[in-house]
Image 1 (tube, one colour):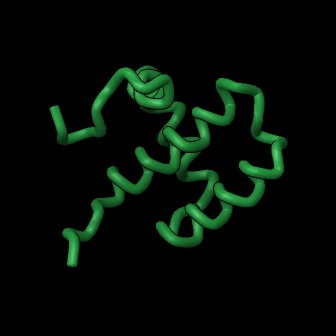
Image 2 (cartoon, one colour; image 1 turned 90 degrees about the vertical axis):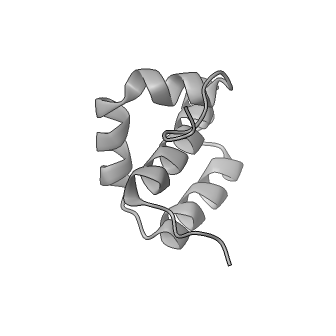
Image 3 (spheres, one colour; image 1 turned 120 degrees about the horizontal axis):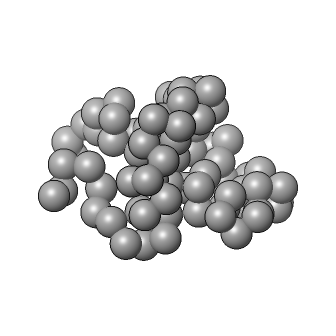
Length: 75
């Protein structure tokens, strides 16, 4: 069994997923509307917490969403 993810790791993952759709202008796509709520449910997160994390860590989240930065703690 894998190590439990920290709240920061969960927020980062959800934020990167959301930002990857946002950067493509696909937040209204069926794929996003299907996947994102499931991720929130599985990680036990609220969208408002993800948005707050994005606001506070925008640069790192955007870099990761573009595929150019490791996850937090992996540096």
